[in-house]
Image (cartoon, rainbow, N blue to C red; front, top):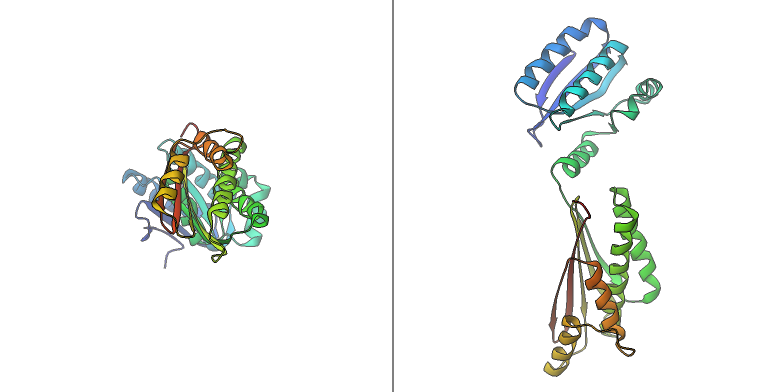
Length: 261
């Protein structure tokens, strides 16, 4: 079996996997260059370099891979190293490669990166959360950490944190004493955040449903309108808000677009 091979990734056919094995020295460069030219000619611009079985990667080989990066970036492509060993990572870091090409511990981690960056694949969070105000800071922090880990800016995160706080407190305020939880759904990608909060409630009459719907539709900042003030802020910080009120359930959904996306 050749120590150098290229194949298309089954899970993501647009990704080419360059697998290297053993000692990759100067003598390997012609074969690497030939394979790269062949696949680039076929317009494969996303590359995962499998280093799981590499014992040594020479400077010329690293240079060839850095050259590949320059070529694919011009086509909005990417390159990443997958499964490099500890010793190899130390050597690559000494050469400063980690500042230019990302490493991923396995193919699943690489696919997670690729799908987020190039497929705009969303992340999901579904929770049944205790309907107690003391737990809300925990929920806010969880959402904040998730968004920050994916590059959301502090200003963007602040608006989402406020929305989470207001909707969660609203769910507790309208929750039924017999139901100690509310449902929290989060979906986010590189362009937008979507939040849905659902809580059960005691039986509402049609009049109560109409009054509550009016408060959601036209919230005010009146001194006694505690609910309205929160919903007003939610509307202010979101791009879209919808709601559904039934006799035993209140559901609020918001969409917040990222700035400049």
